[in-house]
Image 1 (spheres, rainbow, N blue to C red):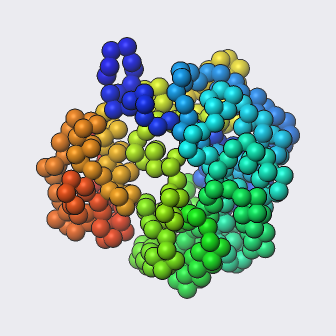
Image 2: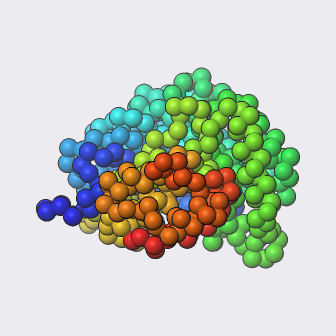
Length: 388
Ligand code: SF4
């Protein structure tokens, strides 16, 4: 570490800086959701806005400028337009407007014209809408509150107000979903002509309604089926002119999510709001995942940080490799050597990935093959703990 600075050499002052804002409010809880979320009421929203302002006062970014910002949740779109402007104003007063990209997640049922106009006025450049499926039966199976009609109306309104980039999220391998239903969902989403498409394999997070069904044997995990669904996605995205740039993400040229790419490349980001994670100030940490506890900490002038891990070049190198390999561009081993001072050319786990056909070399770049991408989670697990 540099003298007088408490963060690793590899995190430079001129590296990209992001801000993640967690808005914890949802109207109801979806069956598969493992995020921290609570039902919203006026009192809760007002105290949350106050908390955001207080937390920002405790974040000392010096004269660093924000490159990207991402509002996730929860459902940021549940905030009324005036409150969105208050939160946006608090952040931009403290840290300025992000120079490159500003994403806000919206649920179809929360999309309203006045909110979109407020976000546009604030400087938001990218809307990400979690549609999950275009099939009413599957939306119901997921416990989602929106209908196909709401999705269509919301999407049209977002386009009409006009943002530089629009993403839609889909979920696949939903219990009872057939391969053909998944293909229809992907085709339907592509027919909307978004700029970006995220597709997530349904996961069974602990303490969710879906996890309980799994334990009761009412649903089961079928990895062969999941692999077939991945293949369908790759075929349809390629046919629709969408390039895959990460395991779960596809975009038209120039529309990859910069905020997420920076986090996968192990840049720094500040998390604000209950349960928000940060990689900032020499550590990786999470804000306490409870609105009341988070507010109580801020009252005392403290950010209630839990799960704190001190950053080291070894940890950042390992995660650059794990997350970098999830991106189609792969990792440039020469660039990693320049940044972290470690030569991975003969690193046994990487050589093994190549010999097993899961990764391939292109000069100094190492990237996963399609076979490797299919087992990207297992590749990550094999690398875990090898370098940190
Ligand atoms: S999936 Fe999204 S909308 Fe549903 S409960 Fe979770 S955070 Fe809220």
